[in-house]
Structure formats: C-alpha cells, structure tokens
Length: 228
Image 1 (cartoon, one colour):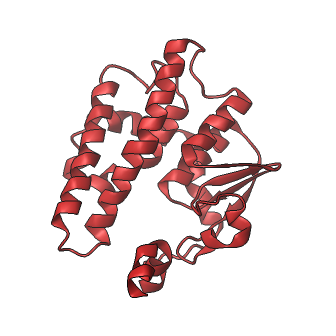
Image 2: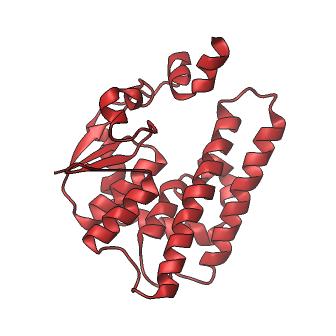
C-alpha cells in the first residue's frame, strides 16, 4: 500500500486532496516538522530533501508535491485534461508555475512577515510583492478559464488550491480580496467533500503547534549555523 508522508501544511494538502478525490488507499505517516521528524534517517531515504510531502509507492519514492501529483495522475489516469499537446503544455506550465513561483514566494512572504526579524523590510517587501504578482497572473488567467486548464478539474487546480486556500494568511484579508477569480476556484474546490476530508487528515494525529525556539532551530537551519 502507498505510504503518504505528510502534515497539515499547504504542500501535503495538495496530495491529500488528490488521494481523497481519486480514492487511492494509503497508509498515513505523520511527519512532525516542528519536532524534526523530517530529518530522521528513515524519512531521508524517502526524501533526501527532508521535506513533506513524500510517498513510498511500493518502493517507488516520489517527493515534491507537484511531482507527486503528476506521478499519481499519470499512474491512475485521473484528473488530467483531455490529451492534446496544448492541454499537456498548459498543465505542465501551470503546475510548475505553482511549484516554482506561487508556493515559494508565498512561503517566504509568510516567513518574513511572521518569523524573521522585523528590521528586514527589503526582504519582506520583495517576497510580498512577488506573492501578489503571482496571484495577479493566476487571477487574470482564471478570468478567462473556469479551471487552470480549460473546463477540466485537474491536478493543476489541486496544486493551486493547496496554497491559495490560505491566501488571506499570506496576503492579508484585504490583499486576498483583490483576486476574486482565484477565490472563486478555491471556494469551489473547498466545497468538495474530498477537500474537507483532505484537510481533516491531520486531525488523526497530534502535531506540535508551538513555533517555539526549539521548533525554529529545527525548521530553519540557518539559525543553528549562525549560533555555531
């Protein structure tokens, strides 16, 4: 049976959504990143990058949320657009746009807004600007398209949903409200029963919720380097 290494963060939620939508049975393996589970040798064999999510599909290891989405979609034949060169190009383009842009810039925007020292105004402004820029691109695209790839609900939408459902946390309520087309798609996906089940997976386990100094030193390795 497929093993799903996860927690309740945006990237694991993308994969959780696919697993629930597609009805793929799996063994849940919680990884508490605030306690350092991601650096245990047994997990690093699955993902040498020490991040969630990752899967072990009967000995086939896949890591990075969007790579997992593509792997599972191609294996099951589910949540892919009609098979044309144009659709394939759009799927890959938007999937990687989320992977290389929306996710990283949103994550860094949150980090510099909530975790980093408050005197780093340049970095905070840069990442917030880039997060908004990526949301604007997505919003303009979705003004012309029901889903990320035409009229078909695909893994590209699941990838977007993982981060965009937290847009108000990243951008603030006023900032997120600018992107009505993104909200329309996120609300539609969030209303699906599979989405509720995906979000609830984390509630089957107890994860550390405090972002105390111990958690920061574990999750942000540069702090340990600086201390040394």
